[in-house]
Length: 601
Image: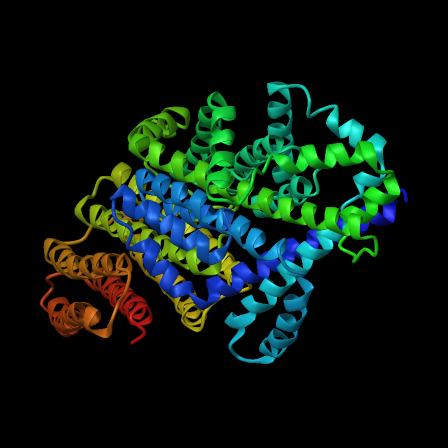
């Protein structure tokens, strides 16, 4: 029977179900362990081995090296991991992703998947309607194996089409060139599917059916290791320099590992085969040779029956069918062992060269030099449009961005201080323009952070993270209010000097005194936001500073009218003076609002 367009669509649908199941399972596990996963990665030390083990653990949990790598790139983007630490975790992720091949090998080829996938799906369906949505990973698990079963059933039957088999064999008998060709095919397949786990599953099926030799299948797996790096590199396109370097390190690590194995390719694959034979499992190279011999003896109809999963009445054909099934299991074990051994050896060799990788990535992607004298930052530092990781990791980026936002707004206070200390019109204008520029940027940053929070709110989040989103919305709004108060101070100082006047020494000194306390409150706000976890006790110093500011405001207001009466300064100056005191009071209130929101007080 010909392979029709409908069959091709059925094949794509099966692949889609497999990928969808993996996505649901990964998201469910991340949601169940979201906060703990953040803590595991956030607590990462500079020790390479610990980073390697963390990558293995996290990837084994989420069943996706791409997901782990995206987390790592996000952490580097947020400044939570150094490049060297990130490379170690990525190396571990390559080992962790081999779990998928073993799961498919142990369950996907030895038993009828539908015998447990359908009942598991039936059990997991009620979980969709419960509040514990994180248990939905069971739904994903059953969908993944259903997709695998459909994928196996929808693959074209090459055994019944000798001409197609000959076409395929034409590319498998070209010596080492065949290895390179199928390595490229594996890379392209993974680039298209965006999942090395899916393409490894396809490779396992192709080899277990005897379409391609064991060596060719291992070459495809090597290519899939290269292709899987595209996800992180695409996501890092809009990220900062360090995140781009982390993504590049993933590509370099896998490419160098593949090149190293290609040098010893045949000895390496023979070593895997010998291991299996010594363990009494069998020779993974035997299936392809066995099916090749059978195709020369049996007609296409018989070969189609032998390669099917249906029970055969002919005892001789049934025996051959059982033999093929046994050899297929050996092949799948061999490929899973190759995949694991390659990634483990690659990681254990390359982990000692992490500093070298760091230097290569730094040279390949140098830090962008700013224009001379230009220290202004006109965009977000940690959040980029090109990368939207899992919600849990995205919130860490927001936390870092809010701390940076607070530090930037606090910088506006230095401009105001400079305006208080000078009467030079040129210097005043320069400082005032800087303050206005920072306030405009502050408005844009608030909108960008809020927009990013809105995107994250539509991803899978735990209850604590959902609460954090509301907190971060409020923090961003209150920081922008701090900026408004700061620019209000600058505008009033500028307005008064535009009248051709300047402040008396008494007023100037009093304003500098209250300015000092207000600046200290703003800096304390930025310091608190840089901490991972905050409690109400962390806000005590901010409350003390706010009280000092309010007490000084009350004292200055009480003294003001007496100073005007005794002609220490005139009434117009007192109006500007009290307006500025009022702005400082507002600024202190907004800072305290930020601290209260951050500490959930």
